[in-house]
Length: 163
Image 1 (tube, helix red, strand yellow):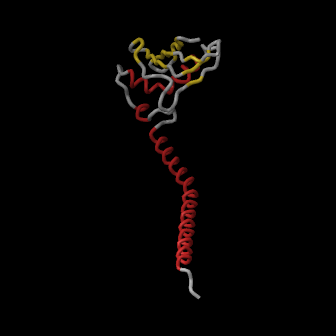
Image 2 (image 1 turned 60 degrees about the vertical axis):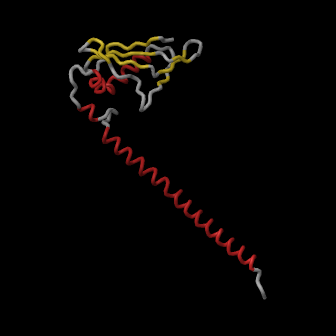
Image 3 (image 1 turned 90 degrees about the vertical axis):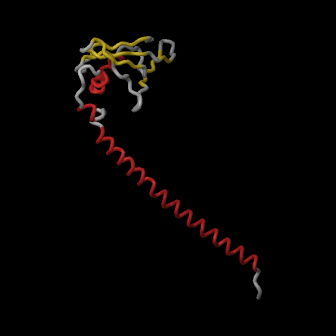
């Protein structure tokens, strides 16, 4: 009994296609099972690297342990930034009628690099990373500043253009 060569060829090609599809599905399943493990391992390594580079206050360890030149406001400001952020933020929030929304992130801090206010005793930090609502419900982004002593003690915090 003669066989149809076209039908035989189509059957072989169909079998190859099914085999390739099965192999592709198996490879995708292996990748999908492996993806969470790779993600966890990557996050763990990144976390370990960051914890080694930063101390518990979130400041680079090299900055916290560096000795600053007495006239270097940027170095001194970097050393006390984590210490003054919470008291300055609370003092600014206390001047508002409504609760604010801080817009800071890991890349943009609430307070800018400092400048001398009354050298060599006080530093001033500026910022504008806050949103507040006025009495009409409109959102505003006022600027603010915080004056601190060299040791990080809060002297004054004030909003500008506040609602």
